[in-house]
Image (tube, rainbow, N blue to C red; front, side, top):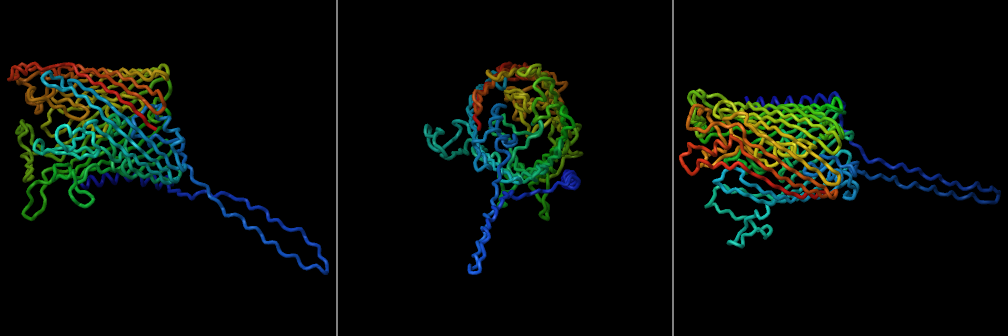
Length: 618
């Protein structure tokens, strides 16, 4: 059933493409270089000879042959006007964007553009778990280096390569005893002590962030992009570049784009996990090694701008994971599956008056945005009803594949809604408000998954051209089971830079669910019941007098951000965040029912985050 549904859905996605191609007369207009017209010089004819009876006939003068026709070299129209989609991998200011777009000195042969970027970043975090019993001061310095090459070799062919290196300063572990293990020897190798830990993450410092080829028609109406690329739609709230992290998002995908006047239609398919490698040997993501196996991410996005003050977008994106095999097989050797395919669909729309490259519509006035999305589909798992499975003990047997009694398939039932409203009375000043609600799950043991899953979303920088209009800069609370009320006050001076004040107030949607940071669910220590906030996983503790009261307020966060671009290629970014935990965390940390009397009052309400980065890009 899932395979048929999967194929049917792909068919529906291809119908608009075939329709537009047949109706819009879109055909590849491959051209040849224009030949330079050469006007041949007029042939000089000798003057007529005087004829005398005794004079011999005049000798014929040979005609001059015209020179061979010359051809003009192709000059890329991107020279001095590089489109923004070719430097999506950078987190830069508007002044830096303009300098990169208009630069002509880094082009060679009129068709190739090179560029470079370096972004060192220092972070300091304090008491991120709001717990006085733990020591969690973390100071890190990391660095992102990028080198890119854009080649616009003809009106029909363009490519881009972005080579990226991201590393933690002092993070390499090399061979040698004690002081010889300092990370100062380049490419010294990695030492893994399997006696201390079974799973060891190996850092891939360097690789291709982008490596794609564009094949397009001359009129730019149709384009196919193949290879490693950044997928970014709207504000990036559903899927985006996520440049607020140094690594960022990239997909190995094929994407087709049709653009007709004020309309655009995109359809893409990406492979995000593979069971086997190119030689049919198991990969690092193989289910035999505990990985997800084959998984793909595909979807469609349609946008239209009927007026300058209105942009409409509708989309559907799907994350599909293969079904999982049980350990046993049938007597005939066929496979048994303990989990069916996992298919998570995210469907939604976005309305806004920020229609010019997602920037503010005018230098002054009102800007607004509304976006909503729903998550549907099936997890592939089966679960027994609550009346026989209140503690979650009945599960599918992974060895035999036998489902639990009276089981039903588990469905996705989650959603997110976001709204922004801003006012710019003068060019330098803007004040805005934002409300985001991402659903939570009151019972994580029943037949539905109601906690919204952001998957590949941009975090802090979601919001398009409005910097830091996403969640809080600290990243300690994110849009899952949360109501986020925030202000965004920005003052931008051409001389002194940009100042931003961005407070957030976070509240739970469902009190029984947990709270989540930028990297998903936040767990707690054993001393505080192994949860970071008041929770009721099975929704069975409503009348338990020995449980802490479920709290609603997660935290309040105040962010101060300063950005300045003293030179057109260099910017400095500074951020300071202060958080104060609410009753959802306080009631869990201050638990008078805790059996250990020394762990009954571990609540420490203040947390902080400081960051500084320098961004150089050409």
